[in-house]
View 1 (spheres, chains in turn blue, green):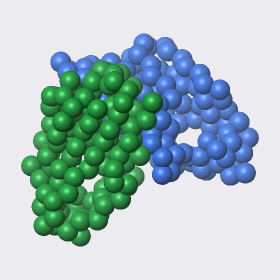
View 2 (cartoon, one colour):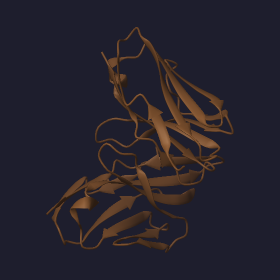
View 3 (cartoon, rainbow over the protein chains, first blue to last red):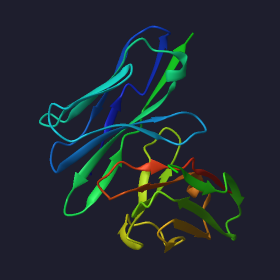
View 4 (cartoon, chains in turn red, cyan):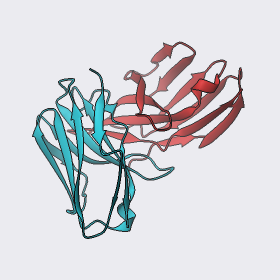
Length: 113
Length: 112
């Protein structure tokens, strides 16, 4: 059974705090690692896709890193704002002769003004 | 147009009802997906269509029946569902199965 683990499950921070979350995934048959941002009552929105060990991606105050050898990715948010409040989903793309994407349960971020 | 639309937004149905969920995208994507998500759990893949053909069925019970009438549309036909099938049903599409997926807002289903 292939599992993607995300921690923490939820996180409460103050506006201006920097924060980070972890995504752990199996290191075999790796194809890609995706991060999505999911606001309540909206569609999940793609943030990053990373394919190579050591990849780092950045979008404004949000950045992500990838370690495929040990099977983890970090998502960092610098100077959290209330509008960053959302669930951050990690998804592991696997190639076992066909492509499939396995999602984690997400980290729910609450940013208080 | 980078939007995936889903209808209806909410659906309440009895265990003997037949209903359908609809999903539409006009991005020219060739892969479309159905996911089921229960509260605080990961979205679980149900079906994948690639070039309008079913390519993955994750051992989903036959009371869920997918249909891809054309490259822009994906339906999920529901019949004789159980209360435990109550969940958020998400549709997604991507250029290819290995690419980033674009999601709809979901249909929240309640089976009574």
